[in-house]
Image: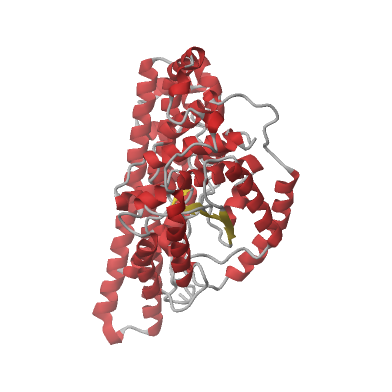
Length: 510
């Protein structure tokens, strides 16, 4: 049972990496689209089989990044009926896609049960060759079942959440935009929560930050003792650069305690804040960021968690270390030895997520308002530090739509809805006083990326052969065909494409 759970986690890594990139759908010529909709009923099958050319239909707008949608939404005009029809088509598409992979998971599960039954019935009379073949069948079908389940439960819903959010933005942003402009004209926006941005650094967002330092120190010490933190990245230049970006943001924030920022050697696209100014950035996030404003935006968001004392408030109900330990116990049953940080790799999959707090909000029953608060404050801190405050929003958009790099942490499923988060961040950016020459890119950032390249290559070489989330109990099995995904692939293609069969992956010795 534990082994099956861990295999499921592996495919959660795969599926979550897929899910945030599965949102680009094909665009078709306006006349072709009109003719097609006349000839086909608005069924899920019609949605999934659309041709892949294009102009500006309502559906085609959902392929665009949030940043562009904010600009064009006030000029886009579709009827209420068109929005309702598109929303219904998305619902049908999601339902059909999830049903398909749910059925696949069931089919793969039955194949596992059948192979185990053969092993039990055959007993000692089964030849070594037959036994090996059945072991490979069980191993491969368990993997395929886990992959199908994670697509059903996480990847596909996340992809469609993103599409629904963009549809809501197109429909609702024009009115909200006018409301925001009215608040700016009347000066009412000054009365918003934390609207005193000219006093950043002199405000007291949450009294008692100094009380969190020891709690953070203890958490870091305990996590390192249990081997739940990846090792520090062994590159002084990169550590120094990231520290300098963090300190620039911290000087322009409401943080009252020293900032301790460390880059960890991990491929996760992840950053997290522990109480008392302890902030960790994982290597994968540096790889994913395209410019310094994106990196600064994420760091500002994490610093905001500490200034608002979110971690401390949550730890009143459970300690970070104790929650990690629950997951680590499961990992310990599976692993015999391993690399530093492998425990964290497991722990993250048991409900902990990146780009936010280390603790799962669902486990603690905490309001998602914490994330929205950190978004608002983080935008303010990046702006105050002279960065383009849209950096964090752009990074979020890239993770949700354009790149799909998120590797193993399903923070999209535990954070506030995409639409609310995007709109709140854009509103705050509009309220901030305009600044000239905001920093987006720097030579130092580009130099950091050069330093990072050989480190990534070397680490990938070293990781081969080390413990992974997929425990290969039976050697010499031909791995089953993966559900192939190409960046930019429409989700309909994933849902309608050829997939592995329950008996399509056997041992290479057969």
